[in-house]
Length: 506
Image 1 (cartoon, rainbow, N blue to C red):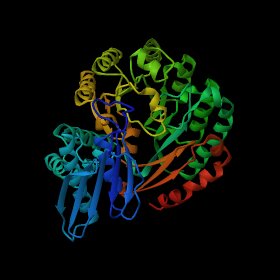
Image 2: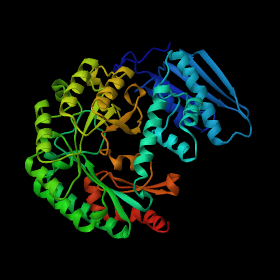
Image 3: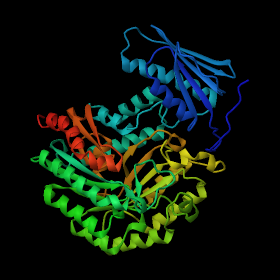
Image 4: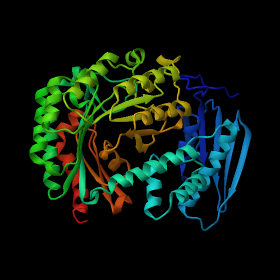
């Protein structure tokens, strides 16, 4: 007898189940896996193939995909009993993209029928919906034609189609203002934080444990930055983004050392946007803000995530709601006129009431841009690694909550300007950036839409070379481990050489 696995985390009414997926050939398994995860977020899915022996286990549901020359069959078993069988006929001349769309539609319709619910993004498994729309618009399609294609191809809901089209048009408008094709953007990673948040999956290191590594890390980082500046000489550096981690975890001297070095080796006159994630208010001081102004940083991010003290305590952010407000006011007092704030919806224990309280306080502060993240529980996050400890915590996100955040942004005269999705995102929703006129984060658009090469420096940083207007990309990733990064810095430089050589011929 098959029994349900104990629910470790409760997300609305969704239980975490033990599932299996069997395929008779290795094709589109990631897309099918992603769709199943979207309907059963956080559940365990074992993938196996014809000829493999499935280990004994208690599977709540077993899925099977059978590929044949002119058809694809999707079977669903519950307690070893077949409960669903759907078949789609395909043309023998269908190309790979068409076959993928066939199988995704097939799986989506079966799962929607079984679960009695539709996903807001339909069977779309990609993380860049607006990039798809932008490609359609660049090919000459109208908004209406793009909307029809998004609906017919992926089954996306009307409000999400409208969001993707609005964002794509805004992005095109902003990118048409400068010649991004001949330039590049720079990302600088500072992988230190005052403490690690419960939901965080980034390679961040608590400063209390890693302070002894900071100077040697900055030595290696500056070596990598010098290499990038030398190899990209002759190209304009359009945007700079210092992220992490929390860059303002650095001491004032360390922060100034880094900013002074960047200013000395990169062509700053052409930089259209210089962002530093100030991030957590417990790392922000008047002295550090003065340094940021001096170099000059044009955009900062102060990230509350929530304005509910109980949640801040639970997720490991060791500061108060009052700290957020006071540091925001300090930045305004010092002349920062482009301040972004990040919020996360779907945080543990937060429902409509808590989100409403947060939005009310954000609106009172009136930042220049607002980024709404739907919680995505990644494997490396402590909340996922130690989920047995959080058995009674609920995770809630809904279209109503997402609409509340949109209404808050619109109420501050902001419009959506960038959009992306993640695996295991709460409610299968999205992350949206809203901004007031001329306060949009250009770097965010360039990296999300893959329109420009991003040269990235630092432990865990990923350089992305963009070719043929985004039709092809090449990655060069740095190691995440701090000691490895410092000791193997010359190897990190060599990893970039192939991409740099190719991009120099464009």
